[in-house]
Length: 133
Image 1 (tube, rainbow, N blue to C red):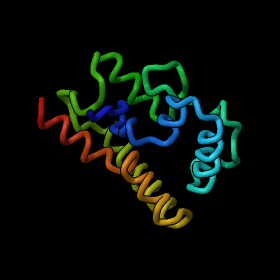
Image 2 (cartoon, helix red, strand yellow):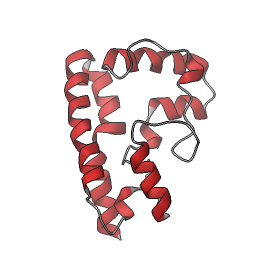
Image 3 (cartoon, one colour):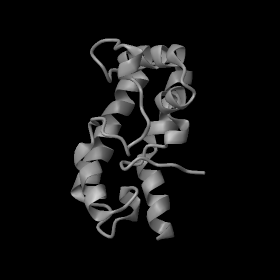
Image 4 (cartoon, rainbow, N blue to C red):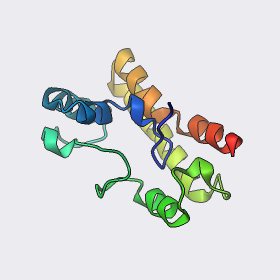
């Protein structure tokens, strides 16, 4: 079942979320290294800083404006919004393209594919949800 973050990330395919759900410190360490390699962190952070239980937690996210908006509207993700696509989510899609480029430059093909499925298909995920509304 598709479980999307407010921004369209696929939580079920996210290595960070999966490692957290499996309570695997070793996998969280690997994810921390991958996030640095992909250019998403300046340093490899401790595994406890990588823990993610999804958007419904108090943890800070780079897309907090999306999260705040969705919470105010009482929707699970932007795909359910009557204003979709808005400027906020379009900015997220644009930022995702930057992350795609960084990842392609810095990661192996396997790492890229892993991250692609979880994070780089936001727009397609949101479009699919929005079509169903």
